[in-house]
Image (tube, rainbow, N blue to C red; front, side):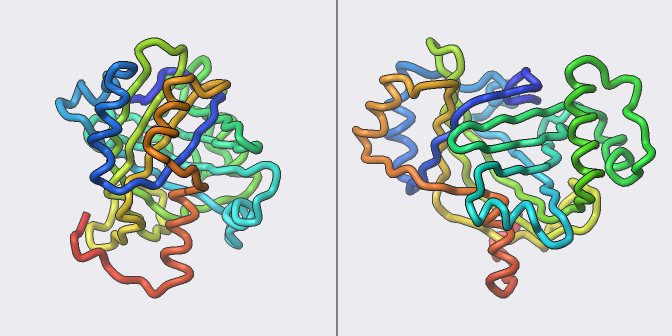
Length: 251
């Protein structure tokens, strides 16, 4: 499963934390302009699971750079789709420069990615070709140069919609956001280790250049207040700034 088929994505992302009861009115408001993402349709329901394994340096320099609000912010992560992975994961490098998001991702076998990250001499598998190969090489080069290691595993459910009329516009609702601290190169979670990060819904509006008029109207009509939100930063704060408490609801 992929959210998009491109390996290099440039876009803007506006985020809003909303209460759960607001999701249904927003669904109704975007219905004339959007349809459910085909990948969500493929598994037979509105939402699908996403797991992101985030990497950072020993002293959490990527986290600290994001917190201080420097001009450029960088994330390295491995993304998996537990319900429909097809035996693949995505190695992603995500940069944010002011309001512009640059994301580069390449897919690789779920059986081979750990070897690539763990072994500085490991070659890129021959079956990874074309743009995927370029993206995987980019991830591996950065990971080795920065000497990153696993930091946190974040899991959530995404309800995604794509525009019927615009070149690239997406509206997503992320819920059930949980995280756990990790040290191993694995997307296999410890089912007793989750901690809930936020009980609000993260609504993201994603578009290429200027926000289309119907999205501008949506924000105004519902009084949405844009705010910075990072699942990775929230996961680090959850374990470093407060005592760990197991989520009583489980995974």
